[in-house]
Length: 113
Length: 110
Image 1: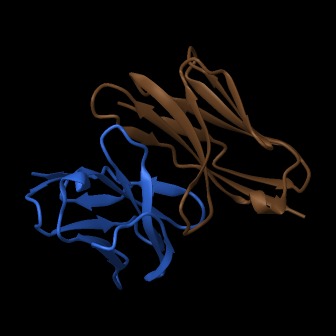
Image 2: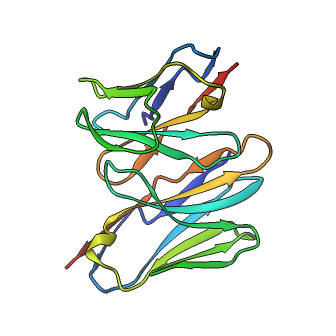
Image 3: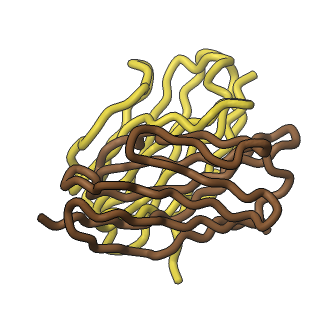
């Protein structure tokens, strides 16, 4: 069964600090992995898309890593800002005709001043 | 534990027909999201509701409408169906940040 597990479930940090969110998956066959930022009640915003051959990809203060061998990904946020408070969702897309996404439940990040 | 329920799981319609998809969120969740995923495409955000009011709107066609009812379930109504509407439609619910996704409804338009 395809699964995406995210940790921690929630995280509280102080403004300016760094943090790392984890995503472990058992999706097969693998096509790509995506990280989204989503505010409550709003649509998701794509942060990064990583394919099998990519190990690291950055988007401003966000850096995602992918280890396809261990089926793990991380999202590192540097110099956090209050506006980073949101849910961060990991979505893994499987290949093989149907192109089905498997959604993680997200990590709730709260940045305090 | 209860999960998000979507019905029907599969639906076949012809062009120009109407379809209604239903989503039953996890009990006590106050926010519902709808997503559309076409063949080989990324999931696209359609619309969301918080406490029965529309919260945000994404790439939802004018032919589609949605609402959240007093019992917090939501329905996505799709009229004048086109071949391009064939897709997986996901619903998610949340109480706060973390979302729980339903299994999806696969709509096929012939």
